[in-house]
Image 1 (cartoon, rainbow, N blue to C red):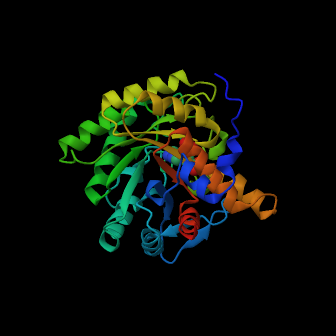
Image 2 (cartoon, helix red, strand yellow):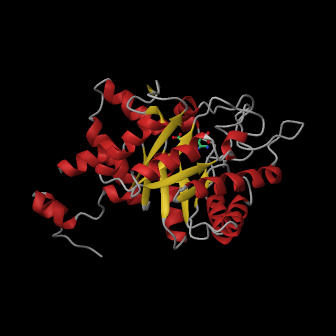
Image 3 (cartoon, rainbow, N blue to C red):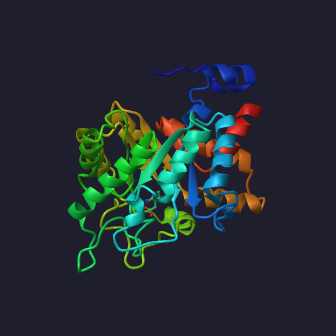
Length: 326
Ligand code: PBG
C-alpha cells in the first residue's frame, strides 16, 4: 500500500481538524480520587512526599468530599490511617473503625458521591504486611481471607458503594464475593486490584498511609514487574471469582499491561496512577522543569489511550478543573 500524496499534517493544521480527528478524550466521568482518613478533628496534614495531598480527619474529609462532588468527580477511594495497629490489623474490620465511620459521615453529607473502600490489612497491621503472618514471618494467604471478607462486609454495611481488595492474596475475590452475598450485599460491586505489581512507585503512599512493611517486602504476593502474561492469569482468576472491574497498578510504567488486559476482557478496566507517579510530576513541576498541567493531562490521556476506562489519580481535582477550562 503506497499513498505518495499523503500528508498527515493537513489534518493537524487547525484546531477544528484536530478536534474532529481526535481519537481519545479525557473526561471527569472517568476519575476516582484517593483520600486518606486519620483520627481526630480538624486535622489536615499534608503528606510531605505528595504536595497537595492531605491526611484528613473525618470532619474535614466531608468538606473535601463536598468539593470533589461539586467538581463532578463521580467517586473517591478511601484509605484509613489509624493510630492503633496490631498483628491482626483489627481496626481494618472494626465496625467502629476509621473507614466505617468516615463512610457513614460521607453518605450522610454527600450521598451522591460514590465511595470505594480499599480492602487490605497493610494500613492496620503493626508489621505493615497485607495479611496475617505465620510464626516464621510469611504472609498466611488462607488465614487472611476471612479477615478481608469481614472488612468488606463491614464497609458495605456502613454504606460503601464499592469494595476494592488490594491485598493480592489468592482467592480473595471469591471469598469477598461470597461474604458480601451471604450478608445481603449482592449488589455491591468488587473492583479488584487484579494486576498489582511489587512496585517502587508506591513509596510516597507508604508515607501517606504509614504502611511500609517493617521487614522484607511485598514481592512474595505482588506481581513481578517483568511479567505481563501473568497479568492475564490474575485477571482471569478474579473474573471467575466474581470481580466486576479489574485494575492495573501502577499505570504509567505499565501501559502495555493495561492494553493487554483491555483487549482480553469484556469488563471495565481501571488503572491506578500511583503516588510515585504523582510525586515525580509534582517534583519536576516545582522545579519548573515541566509544565505541570500539560504533563498531567498527557499522562492521563496516555492511560486512557492504553485502554483504561477508569483512572484512580491524585490529580483528579486539578485535572477536572483544567478540563472544564478547556
Ligand atoms: C495497599 C495499597 C497500596 C496502594 C494502594 N493500596 C500500597 C502498597 O501495596 O504498598 C498504593 C497506592 C499508591 O502508591 O498511590 N493497601
